[in-house]
Length: 299
Image (cartoon, rainbow, N blue to C red; front, side, top):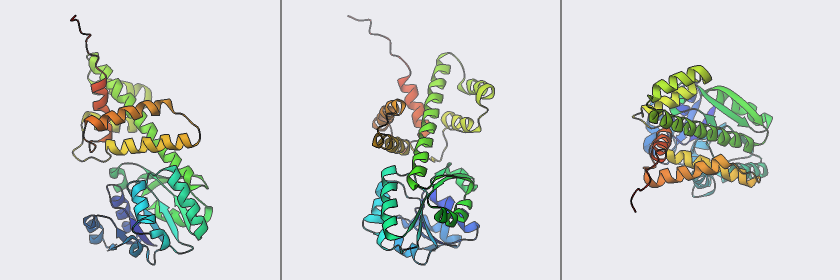
């Protein structure tokens, strides 16, 4: 298939490379042109604008950073939405707000454009292996068109409904579970340390006895041995949590744990660099917040 791929960040680049390896033809665009070079070396064509990437394509895949990037590309300076013809297919793989997903669905329905939401779970290293998990939603015919492309970088696909917003809601809920897992793991490590235990030994005992979870193990390893290359930042975690709470509020739903964690993320962004690793940043916050200061014994 001929594909226009927009957004070549830490996730977009390995996803696009997997599409090339699967034999698809790619025209790629990124706001910073230097990010297109690894794709050009593998046979992709660099586009000067999003509209140029879309020209003649069977589908457009977006892996843009956030709602603001989508606004700029689709409705702002680039106005890609006006360049998409009836019958075109847009596959959104990003983590975006449910509200924006609903807006895109309505816009595309009026224009006769197919829209599939297919956000993915997995870090960049997983994307490089083609082992992401895609959560997809949309009309049946649109999903059928999108499936060969999603399969190029995914080990599995879960179709969660016919409304694209449903897939984006699942992604936000899943990322909330990741943050909650990291938070509980971080506080457990603080507890273990204050009890005179090595966090790694504590984790080995608990994970083997209770969870047998490679996922827990992967994040424990990141927290205790911060990687040189950061895959997901604390800023990204804060953004996703905000989108979750906004989606919950739109359906008159309160999530007390999410509210508490939002305060922790806000504090982390105030006192530390926004570019620090998501899991490492949460662990450092647990370490800072987890030690009670002795009461002032003075007058």
